[in-house]
Amino acid sequence: MSELLGQPVEAAAGLSVRGAEAVDQAAAASTRTAVTMAGVPGQLAAKDPTLWGPEAEAEARVRLGWVDTHTRSRELLPQLAELTSELADLDHVVLCGMGGSSLAPEVIARTLGRPLTILDTTDPGQVRAALADRLERTVVVVASKSGSTVETDSQRRAYWQAFLDAGMSEAEAGRHFVIVTDPGSPLAATAAEMGAFTVLADPNVGGRFSALTAFGLVPTALAGVEVTELLDQAEAFAGSLASERDNPALALGAALGAAATAGRDKVTLISDGGGIDGLGDWAEQLIAESTGKSGIGILPVVVESPTSPGVTGKDILTISYGGALTAGELNDGEATSGGTPDVAVNGPLGAQFLAWEYAVAVAGVVLGIDAFNQPNVTESKENTNKILASGAPTEQPSFTEGAIEVYAPPGVPNDLAGALRWLVDGIHGDGYLAIMAYLDRGADADAARLRPALAEAVGPPVTFGWAPRFLHSTGQYHKGGPQVGSFLQITGTVDVDLPVPGKPYSFGELQAAQAAGDRQALADRKRPLLRLHLTDRSAGVAQLLEAAGALPKRR
Image (cartoon, rainbow, N blue to C red):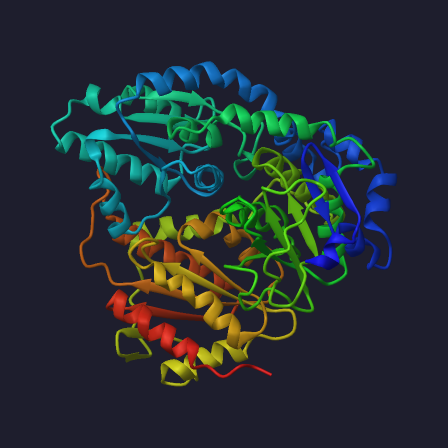
């Protein structure tokens, strides 16, 4: 990374950004200069809701609390200390939440080395495994801003029933729950009925911007994280946000916007090994859901390592991130598969959260979109509800090969290798391939190896998402962003299902309905879609990896 060492660094409060100036200067006109002359830094720091245009103003007015939520979150500290003491005997913390309610806590816990079980799935196998793990010592944090998220409600119901089945009274079961939600949400009322502990979140912060609110702090504090340190880091960094110079978040946002408007509208996110674990998954949701709408957007691609396939490309901006480096240092570690990353972001985690949120808001200004709504996320939800009510449509596989049933449009070759090649060959120009795995993130973890395997053959950006969590993340980009995506959906046979207590469907039926609802949303947009159903999950994943690895590279 010696090339980056020679580039100007912009730094504040221990967080540095390198390479952003070169990205901005490579554009026809400086985005940094334009947003600075327009007064964006000061206006954004002052939470001006007019920055994203008149149509976005109403939404922005109630969604800019993230700019200084770290100051209000200090009011939670006494309550968190009391909760941690009261529940000290419950040392297994499970977080039931989707999207912004789970991604930031996962990064915090992984980075700081604290155990936290994330349950952000409807896969019955994964849910059953969680329920079987140290139940009597478990505290369940149920986190939902709206209070109506179907996945989270289903997980709450399953845990409640499991506690009762274990012989607990309702009062005893209620003690095992901590509810995090917005004031006045349906979940707040449910919490009162359950006798659960309730922590109310900042209502003026959207889910994907909620890392430093109760959504990020409650589960991690219970898991043993000293969350005050995160707030201190953000507060120290916040002083730079109104500045025209020495503002690394502005530099990052201008680079994102400049690259996207110049045709580099994909961003690969790579850990540099500098001590922050999993930030790419959190930033993926922040970028995709904030920018992917109105037919435009920035596609984030989380890659496994600097040497993974698909890190670089003609329409890709490569960004590395880490936490252990100071403003004057840069790790001379492994280079990316294409050489040096375009931009490097290094600094403490609390500052990283605030810097990326600010940068994405700036990119929204540059792109001319509302960075705070998610107009297409509800589409798949509505499709799911309709399918649960009326039943899934009957489908017959186009053909079966080994442990894989293949569902493909007419004219697709009747063999797995040919079907994959059809999907890959249909990606043109600025297109991308999205792998969507409706599987068990634990038991079926090898499925994630498909991303680098297919990236090796495809060439264009390849993303991977576990379902249904990606529906709350890149799912918005898939439907609302540029309609250039091709899609590989992977589902699997459920050997042992699990009922959702109090509902007329099971977790397996809910998972299948979500997959079918998402297929319908993509079909309505006439996007290329191949569905592979694994009749034996382990054998099917192995078979699929072998087929992907045998694909010839595209020229």
